[in-house]
Image (tube, rainbow, N blue to C red; front, side, top):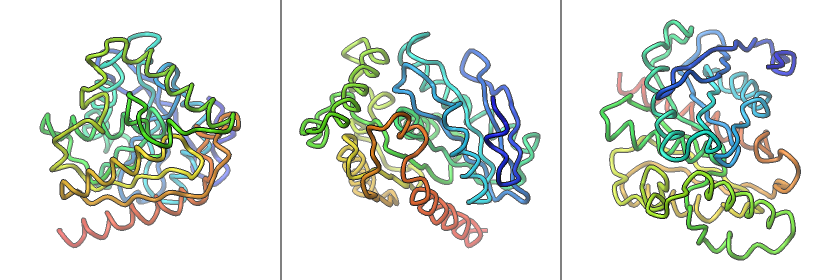
Length: 277
């Protein structure tokens, strides 16, 4: 990985090998001084690729802006093994990160799952799995332009008009075909969080999308379902981000807006944790 891209703000990234469900996984870690907690971030790639390398500049900026340690972790892609391999990896990495947080250099106790696009799906799913499997305990989840509905049934997905949005929708469809080759898996809550009927007991969520993202409606719908289940969920739809540009999604288009939202959300988690101490 090119560390020169990721050290502009003075926080050097460190290459690591994280523990997945069955195989070691590439990872990159940034630890600011006196980090409040640890964010485990899963990159995009439509499940068929894992765009960790492309996400590095954003992840370094995330550590710099928030003061939280950030671990960007790869996962098994559908080209290697379909569902549930990536989901199992995401949960395994969270467990590993919790267990190894002191060795990783993070003194804070708070742990948050996060991700973008397919990684947003994995961040949401790993939160469900952590609840169902007795840990690790998460302080929050941050879902950026997440893929949550393999059925691609939302209005924003079905009403795409311009060519850029159409390409984005086609990429989602292609990714799901690779990740979920068995039709029955498309309604499994660990593949489609939007299909879950059990959302109580999940950690607070920040869910971000953009006006021109075909995934925006399912982000809003998931936020509404979380709120109806009594889960704190902040749902924000940001201005258009030119989502059809090459790598716009994986490099987190509208980065400054997103960083502001994430920083405020994490600050709230930190205050809540101190109040409960």
